[in-house]
Image (cartoon, rainbow, N blue to C red):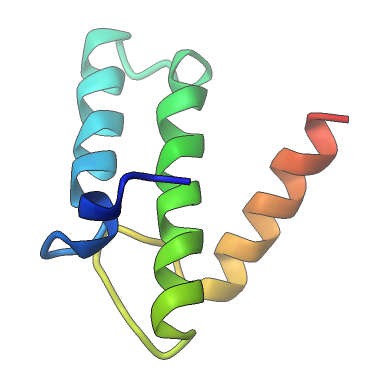
Length: 79
């Protein structure tokens, strides 16, 4: 679960989104090297939508339906 302040900052989960950008920049935009940062953002967004509902919005997170698909894919890859 992400730290409370990552969900509560304005915009929500923004530090996680910035971490992805930093990672991509450091790794020549190779997203395979940034999967930990991407997963951390998705986890923060999952908590955000659980807390505030699917109607909530933040520019840092994908739409709830897409997020649920991505989280399901990540969990299946982890098996």
